[in-house]
Amino acid sequence: MSVYNFSAGPAVMPKPVIEQIQRELPSLNNSGMSILEISHRSQQFEQIMADAVANIKDLMAIPDDYHVLFLQGGGTGQFAAAPLNLATKHRSIALLDSGHWAAKAGAEAKKLRFHVTTLATTESGKYRELPRLNQTIPANSFDYLHVTINNTIEGTAYHEVPESNIPIVGDMSSNFLGERYDVKDFGMIFAGAQKNLGPAGVTIVIIKDELMHHVDGIPSIFDYQLNADKNSMLNTPPVFAIYASGLVLKWLKEQGGVDEMEKRNRAKSSKFYDYLDQSHLFNCPAFKDDRSLTNIVFSTTHDKLDQAFVEEATNAGLLNLKGHRSVGGLRASLYNAMPMAGVDALIDFLYQFEKDHKE
Ligand code: PLP
Image (cartoon, rainbow, N blue to C red; front, side):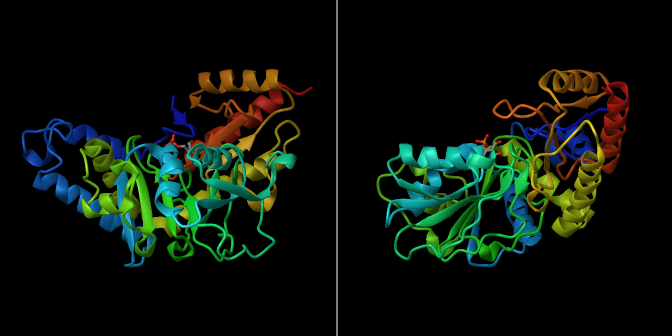
């Protein structure tokens, strides 16, 4: 039986990469040492790091006036690090409240005593559509605008980056390298690796140089400038996570890069959304124009049936289809490494389930 992992994260990795890791695990490049043992100061690892940075720059067409950093602490760490580094002038950030993770980012900034102003929210409509800016942001009020580009839990995504007259900090945790964005539209982008890139443990930060400066009174580990000065090796980096992510970046390039991934992700998600939209049992709450390519949120008509669906799907090798605990329902994450065969198997299963559970 084929097994497909639809988890929102940690998530599916490309099979050839897992096989390469397996082959190389005992001895990296005949060094007699495993990647789990080698020093981050070794020439071998320096090369791995340099290749990973160069490949991200290449894949995303990152302009020369941006830095790529490999940090730790996940997206949650960046909810704190972004205001600490960037909100130094006004100590005030603006937010588009598009769901759970946007709210979390706002709450973390507030906890650190920054001002947080929600410019638009779709909470009253249960975040089925995205909040949009319908005003020019007042000048000299905020240091940046926080936008969750892909809403992992609600299944929505900004396919067009909101127009903003202040720098945008974009949380791309769940669609990093899965869809083409113009890096120039952002002051900063961040993403934990564990969804669309590699294993948990490394967080990618892409930041415009002019926004980076030493900040007094913040933890060194969160200081972007210090981390840039030290080439993302201010302390011991997550060597294995960077190595494995580096292999995925090479795989992505071989596959045709971000444009090809977006094409495949559009094809996979459209096929699945089309099925949901014609179904009499399943439905998808997200508004059509705002639907995510990577996280598809759906449900049956009631909770008990959702539960039965998850159980039967698990038995059929279709794993991790339960919705996030905060919203319930069902969710299928179709990241870069999910093949069309996985989507086909899922649709076949939905079809059979619907037939078996006709009311
Ligand atoms: N932002 C988004 C959009 C997420 O989906 C998640 C996790 O699912 C986070 C932030 C938090 O990430 P982490 O677990 O890396 O702290």
